[in-house]
Length: 104
Image 1: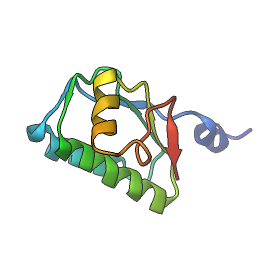
Image 2: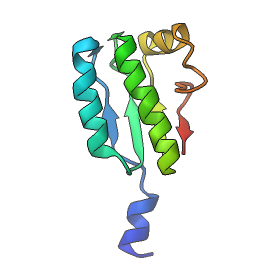
Image 3: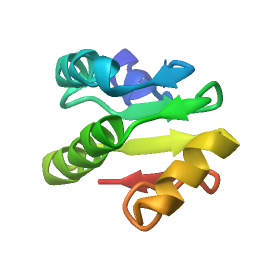
């Protein structure tokens, strides 16, 4: 197997979401995700204790963009707080946290 094939078959490095995904963090999250566009992405939401609707909008937008780009966007290990926020905003069908749902 070539080095290129090895690299494509390797799972992506997780992007660890911070404890506080508040309104002020949304622009930073947006910039960070833009830098990762076009790559398989695995989000680790295990540390999130607070989130805002604006950060969830950024994640929703990113998941849709990754699907359009036909690359993997996966949320794994979502904390109870993140799971509840996704549920309250009706985003569980779009950004699921039940073991890691892939978009793209």
